[in-house]
Length: 321
Image 1 (cartoon, rainbow, N blue to C red):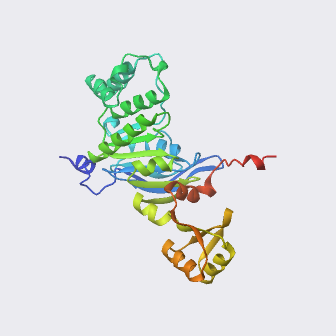
Image 2: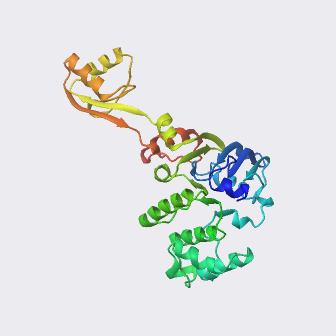
Image 3: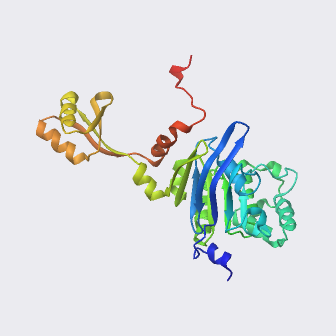
């Protein structure tokens, strides 16, 4: 077994993808700004950020489609351009609409396979893998977006690669397709492959990814495991509602706790647990109508983290001039 294959099976130390100090500028606009992170074999890494954060540009630089202004990318220690038969090392889906609409699904895959010295039989294998075997002879122009996504994933798998890079593959998939993709990518990682999947949907990444790389305006915001992200960026609070909200709020304030007032006499208390607030209310003789421990979703945490990096922000209808 050679050293590359050993690393791909998750037993080596070298990262599958190593991004170091990546910068990309277009004129006076910096799209990617000093980005450094790693993607390891056997792991599904979620690559998150708001639209316009620089995710697609970063993926294009990993694949050698765009030249970095500064920095470098290595795939198992080599630049993409240095990989012999790159389709056998890296499979990518960047644009589900890139296939010629007049070709059948099978012909599309055969063209890619023959250009990369991959056996014709592999086209049928990957169509079966992604659930498109029955549509093999249909023209791509009649495919739904979800079917095009599956076909793009099939093309990425043609060379049986050790690394998969997928840009927003959930777009256009129905609920069954999303569930299929979730299990499919986890199975690929379990085989020792490195999977990098971009998205702006934290809710989906929470169910799919083992690790998160979060960027905003081209800069790194977080590079943590999913569990670490939840622990570090989640926010727990106690929601309490009383007939005497001002009295209860004063008592909570005297304990040095941060408290925010909401509608209907509801209070949000941070840095404590429901049992403590219940005991405090009982000691004060304040009637309690609601007492709940509230945990922010990972989506809430993601939105807070990226709030200052969102390029386009809509205003509520009532604020529109």
